Image 1 (cartoon, rainbow, N blue to C red):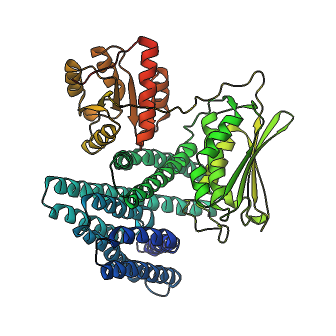
Image 2: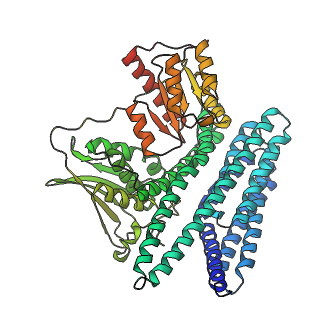
Length: 596
């Protein structure tokens, strides 16, 4: 009866070793990000907090980070020590860096409320980042994140005002969300590890148990689909606080503050965009693997698409003095899915910028070869050895020595390019060698006939004086809408239920409504739109959702409802509202509303 105990114990020990290895790898790879963030925090506190305290905190943060990284790397290699002892040591190291980092919350005793808010966002972002760096050892995550969230919440509550208690409660609420997501992340990690062990066991019996292997393979596919659906569902919980943070950061841009505080807001905004990008990449992989993405090919003007994609990386490239050159024949069109192509090209350009040294050059060029159109993205980075050309298209692969600078990438970009290329049936070619940079080329089918219609220009927009109805059941996100729309100059009607929204329509006539898709008591955004338009015919509506189901997107398209995916920043929200108001005026002559 005790025969299976040894293999089970061995598998459990190997799983613990892998957990420790993941934490150690993440600890080694975040040196420059921690240094930059600690420098920003020190800059915030320098003018108000006693200099010895700030200097001591800064030295403690950097020193503890380096000691922990070295210790975890050593423990991951040293398998002579019992794994349980090394995991306990990992928790102790996380207590140390959590105490060092989280002690920055006490700077709030000297700072004004505006800088308190900025410092809170930085500390909360630090704590949220631990989901991806320490969640595989859950006690270590709790030790580190708790020492960031709890002191921050306590400092707000000690202020004694209702605002302080409210912000403190929100910080603790967000901590609870992160704990839940960390547990789900750990569950997914354990399930993936278990599936790998099962596949290895099945491989050893392939020649003798073909029938059983087919059953196990089907079970593994089902498990993978379940995991993909789980990730899509779990993302809703994470997108809610991200949505609130994105809108509140947008509102902060309209608040008068010192230049250094404005710079911090921009840093937080960039950090939120990176979190959103990483979450989108993870979900892209799960959806592509689950086979729920259906291409919708159409005619695409390449010159406009290339200009739009490269323009989005202008600020990133300029910050590192990287020149981005483009060359594309005017009017050249291809026949493919524009959204998938845009994502592929964006991943390739992002990858090229990351691995190009400061002051280098990235080229995006389009060429024509018979019926094929080639889009080539070339960087001037360190290059890739031929034996690694296939490896770079695998998930979570970042070659040692490949990066020109310490990049904060997640290792999914080229894996997504590979999957989308297979889905679209386009070729992806890589030419590179060490020291010669890298060149990625997409081979696309040329479109026949007249040029495709281009995308609408991104014209300036203004919502000042407009009346906006917000239907959102989450109080945290609803409050963020009030902040962001108020900063745009809007008059806002806020509702948590359809019945409450209808009561507003009985007293007012808003210009446009923002409706969350997943409402309380099982109601959907589409039901809400039907009820609202029954009370006010032709009311322009924008649906906002954290769901990524393709059927939902198709339903919104059939009903001609604009659909925004959380987290939505204030700029994207403002443009969507203005566009829907203008469309309502053109289609039905919808008059300017009134909240009075």
